[in-house]
Image 1 (cartoon, rainbow, N blue to C red):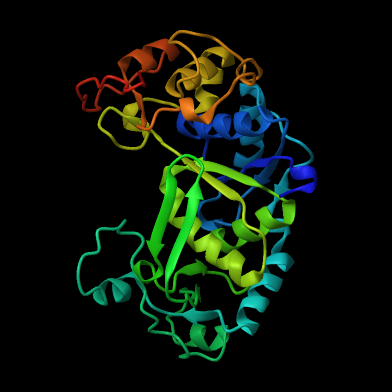
Image 2: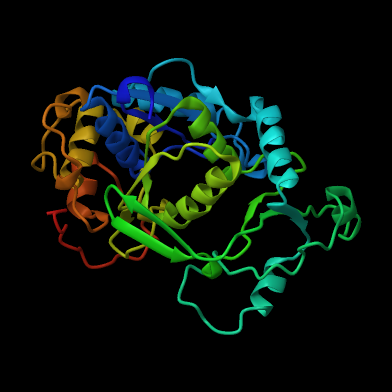
Length: 337
């Protein structure tokens, strides 16, 4: 916890594209969770995913969130400017024998799966094929074709990983279900899992509110923090915003980018009103600023089901579905409502 037990939350987008309504809803909940308890909100730009970074995306995200009515305390932290910090954390893991370079491809990992384990196909258990195989990153690089990089893997211990999620409740995972997970594909350890964990600890973040698709990442980050002897934040994984077909928002569902809504002249209060309705915080049709929702905010009012961008929501914001896009039957928001 931070000094005096104050809540410290954070907004941490990646500049890989424009923010959309799903991002905005998660950021609004993270902001409200901290502000409603007199806490601080920090801002971090997670720009380590180099192949997907879009020029100008970081400044556009700041503009979109300010337009929406969200603010933060202090200057934004930019991860690409903190590479020495991640290098030092990697060095500590290596010195403790908790990290090693791995050259296994996704196909290699899939071929070791003896039976389906019912988990996200992107979270395949790794049994440790490269443990002790290479003496250094450079040696692992030499074993790969030009242009391919090894990954750093965390040497996971046996037993269970468990934490109390502020929204989902008790989450338990047998560490063998993930095994030795990859935490970076960079010689200095500058990857999402390690950088995110280290930066939260360094900033004194006490609470991480983010999408439910990152629950498994929390198990990995908690193991990294434990190995580094760093404090862990409380996690709160909230449902995503999906389209009527149950899939994540995409162009086929209409243009849900905040910048597109701004350019179309949609008032930010209307966008916040829709986000609040999805979150059980306001009736449909309300037009609000984030500050209007601070008093009396309670995360327990947020529906357990994903929020649904249906025809009613699209009409409220004037979002049109491309003529070529297949239409699905409208789902009733479950509150949604």
